[in-house]
Amino acid sequence: MIPDILPSDILPSDIRCAFFDIDGTLVSTRTHRMSQSTKNALACLRERGVRCCIASGRPRYQLQPCVEDAFDAYVLLSGQLCFDSDGVYLKNPIPPASVAGVVDQCERGLYDILVLEESRSYVSRLSDRVLEAGRNANLDYAEGDIEQALSDEVYQFCAFLGPEDEHVITDSIGGVATTRWCDVFCDVIPATGGKPEGVRATLDRFGLTCDQAIAFGDGDNDASMLECVGVGVAMGNGTPGAKAAADVVTDDTDDDGIWNACVRLGLV
Image 1: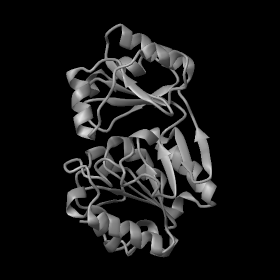
Image 2: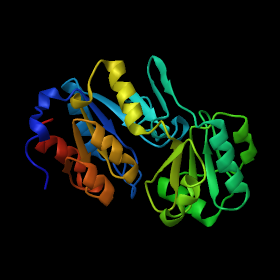
Image 3: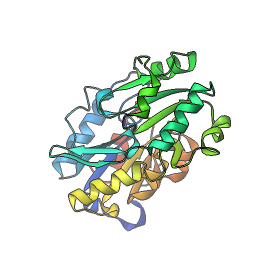
């Protein structure tokens, strides 16, 4: 049960910006839609002057229609590419040497990868694990020549390997960090990046501080974001890591979790 007051004596009027993960938070992983109660919560937050922002591992071209062009800012590719209606204000691609290391491991058959660039993505192979990830996110992936990544800016890889094998990347490739939404794959991002960096850049753009922000998430890849804002809210369907990092835990996404959190915290 989440408390009826904000943590750390933060008043509802202090919250000026809200960040939302997409899959499993704003959008149900079961229906792949945003519930009416979540839409109502967003409308109420906007009415009280709270800026509503996306913070997702997805790129712009994989956003669902319900979140396209409807938010004040977009922290995408796990914080490596951020933009608002005035344009892009943060770009943080993976260092070329690190990209080469991931491509080499993929070519040696250690794992398959999804390459995420600013305007396109492609996978090394449509393996069973890759297809499972696509079904989970309601996406269709296309195969491509992964050596293209060596000459283009890559903002994120999805490496299709389990948690027990993630060290294959971190033990041998410098300049990157890994984070995870599910057991099927891990995100590979710049060591200097992550959702918190995108959140902070967005708040600087708005002239706000981290204490004036609330964030909602459900995965381990949201944990650091939930810790860097004034109030971190984990969904009831979230991972243990997300819940441990959050100030409060709300109900499941499919059980009006965002709306219930906003009501109980005095934000709507």
